[in-house]
Length: 249
Image (cartoon, rainbow, N blue to C red; front, side, top):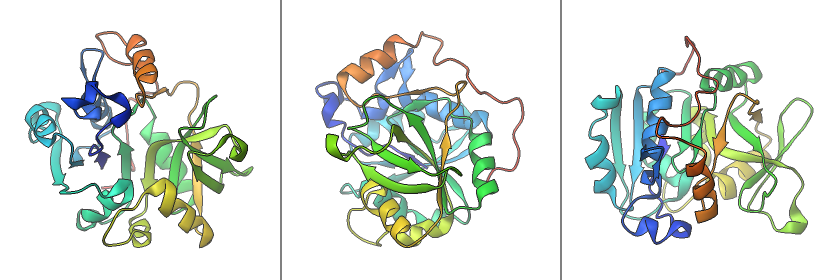
């Protein structure tokens, strides 16, 4: 599932006429890079949630055939949060699945991420990335086995305990959905992950390696840097595998 419902308030006025995930990078929408990357790894069934300017996304991607994928859209009448949006389409998941926040750009190697998830046997595995300024991210505390021992969304300066932050790219077991309320607004960083840790559930971090890129587009400076680093050919081809197997179906 790719999350694409948010209004992108911090990128206004650019997002007054575009969903945040549709801002151009390297000559095409940010979301198009993500879908193409997923397809490279054999992920061809994709759910996208919509709220802000939904017709822009539908009109560009249609049913996904052009990119070799099958897209199902989940229209939200009001924002439900990162976790609430997933809960709304819980019926579509019958096993582990990838979740990708659609306003980021990455070349995370999904084969390695999923293998790490299978190896640890945790409920969730979060791709994490070292960041100098963590105040606008969800920070992750890891033990020597990369088990997550603490998670805090957008900490105050005095609350920072780790340089590792969530990329918004996860592998989730289906029973993670049991921690999400059926109704109302719920967020993975603020609600679900802290609740799971309190319950003693095993969550793990997957540290992006040097051949896996990650770029933000949260604010105008972040977006400008990301756009400047990518040419018309798109993001660097880092970590792209030659073959894939063992993905959730």
